[in-house]
Image (cartoon, rainbow, N blue to C red; front, top):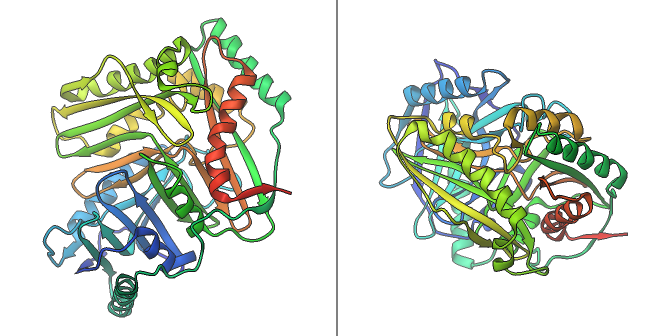
Length: 444
């Protein structure tokens, strides 16, 4: 199935067809659809999804990104005719944003744009106990019924045989590749510029990011990389989103915001330590990391407080333990005073000091002017929203863009008073290690 699609429009009537399906591993369904798979969404808990094909698509450019997407959701609500199926998820628009308008106008991100959301043609949903196969018919899509039947039969075969539809090993085979080394002189110059701005009071924190380009001898298997990430991440959101030219994938530990009715949840995640270099208690005792974390927590509370009748968060962060890293984390929970679309919440929160810095405008200007590689969708919101305005967005961290035999991997570090270029470069190496291991990268 190609990425051809139709833009959302006021006259497009759409039909939703939903069938009960067997519960099988999410990665098995992704492997069924292989290179044509559109997305994978695997949160630590809740509804998981894999999709193929595009029924409808909405691409928008700044400065009207959020307004145009909200209009698209309203059109979806008006034009969607659903065959009710008890407890089945309603259709969602899946996609994401560029870190800043224009960030995805450069190679290798041109197929992603400022914002791009799709309604998939076929979606496999599961919450671990139940599963459904959902198809979206737009206009006179005469092949949809046959495609649903074929996909359902293939999923049933996986359920009966217990075998995943590919022979790839669960181990991570090493692949010869070349990894572009960091230009340490450029990195030091970038960090020195930021530290000077901190010293003069222009900013208090700036997140510096770098891109590592990895070239392999043969095309990469997105399915294999995602499966490897399953064993790397622990309490993280595994995700993959395909557009023309490549697939953005990763395993992020950071929720930006979710909305379910009046309930809002956001998370501050900042402050990092390798499990090899210390303990969670050591991270909690680090004044530098606690300061960096507090910037993020304060910014989230400031953004959400005007919208919420109630807002709660702990005064002391907890330690989030991943396989290779510790992070400081604080959950911020609220109850909306009046209905507010999840996209509006995203717009208020992004970019947080965890991915940009503080004060936001000046820090963003430094990010855009000092970094040598455009961020694209790295560190930006990716996720879903529905016709009711509910949704869930994570921050696209521990991420990479896979393009055939090449991968572009991104990692950042928060620069505050007391930071050093050497330490922060080492932190980005730790974060890049998650994706490098999942890729099976072995320098030749």
